[in-house]
Length: 625
Image (cartoon, rainbow, N blue to C red):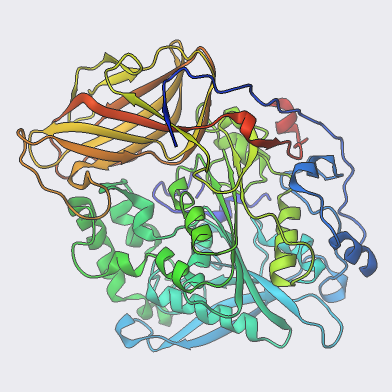
């Protein structure tokens, strides 16, 4: 969502309408790889349609990602563009037109209540004019915002200004159709706003089958979207639907509970997510509103509150029903292009890392694009700049702006939906917090060296705050390294294994990592854990307070960091931070420095392949380059 709309909301697309070994601290890491910035004043390629032969020639071989910056991209607008136009259009030669509305009916289990058994999904499709007998694959966005007056997205037949318009104008002409689909209980789809539950999942699967079965369809369906609309692709992939051949989740959820809880710790929005944020969706005063009352609609807030109190599934299967990744890994036969902002405050990057490695380990073809942006698409310079603060991404601007993204999508969809063209590169494009892009075969990375720092040692000395973490978050220990003799490069999932005593069974630790140049410090990462879950996972632990020493096996949210020589790394421990609630079992926590360690996975940049990206030349990029 954008910041000005409900603070607790997952997303608001409508507001974008304008558009191995352990080593010591100071071991040398090698020379920094210089990044050459190439500014090309480029002429716009979007214009008159190309002949079919020219399109075919353009697809015979693509420019490598590392060489794209040498191509003639159009780079001074507020989104990216494909290199060359396609030739197909809509009615009367239109490049942008209204979609055709349809309902997809399917059977809902009676236990879902509401409108069961009569499920009905609302969608609109854009099919270009093609010769008789020619079929096209379909790219679809599924979400709750179409036809919802409260978020000002317009009707479902209107191309979404945040993504739909770009796909219709730039990718559809290359031989694709496009669809926008309302999930259950939203827009003109009936039943309840199920917040990614069974009814919604079944509706998504029914719509995918419909899209892949039409006489104009070649049978292949791809899904794309951001935030909520980036979560529905994971839902669809659970079913192993034969028509679903690729998904592009952008800051999407692999599970609903995973969005708002971390090691038993709860975000402030968690208890109200179902009804307080999405509860009014689909209620518009007509006779079908009676179909909005479902068991999970009532259970949602209670389950959210119980999870804060007890850290997990207190009763029933509300959260298990809304966890997608396990079923994706078991059933899905398609590909995944996974996109994530490393500074996303709304959908944290642990949705993508280590998810990308789980995909690889389960033989799912996948690519990752992980940049230092917030809850954004990869190619929106003004929005990226506006949402990037100090230590929250601005250090990587404008290199974070991917003006080759639409071309990347075209190449991906051409291969996986049309089964034409070269196979895309499958690996991870990762951007460090200071802006440099590089290739990795997986993420967290292979071929790293563990750096282990003991709390209170000369490598990570106690700086202030004593050793007691107070429940009111007003105090706790602070540790800091000496100035680094060499630059330090690390990434993935740093770990903090901290030994503690507690006054009662409970307590919570929030850990903040900062890069400091004297008194000037910037955020580089954070972690949180309710100590009732100190072993990690979903099983609650018990111990004898005061007498027992326990170890909190904390893991930081994903990060990719460069710390300059002469700087220090500061670690601050408190009882809570960011937008996390105090623990429901708050108590004083005493840190035992001996044996407590901060662990980084470091690498030598000389062993990595860095590359230049297509340079953004819009005014906001030029002014802040």
